[in-house]
Image (cartoon, rainbow, N blue to C red; front, side, top):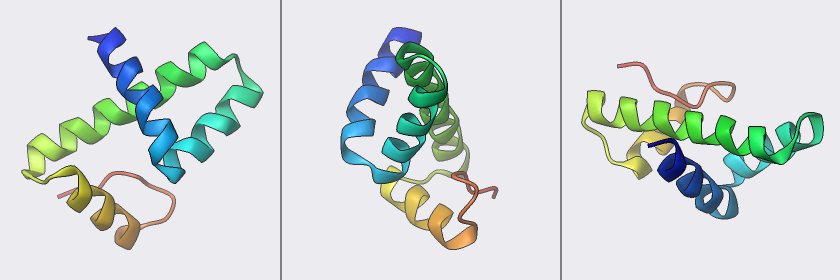
Length: 76
């Protein structure tokens, strides 16, 4: 499961600016491998909230931008 999430994180970092900024910040402070795992964990948390709130990914991101700029997850 970890490997799949890390692969998904690599793709997400390319296309999503918020995750890209977080990855770049973490990769400067730590090694790239740990930064990838951290982003994979963020994706896992987003997946959990998608399943819990029955939202698609676009709606989850849209709602999280409206609720708080410092948090990437919407609590329902």
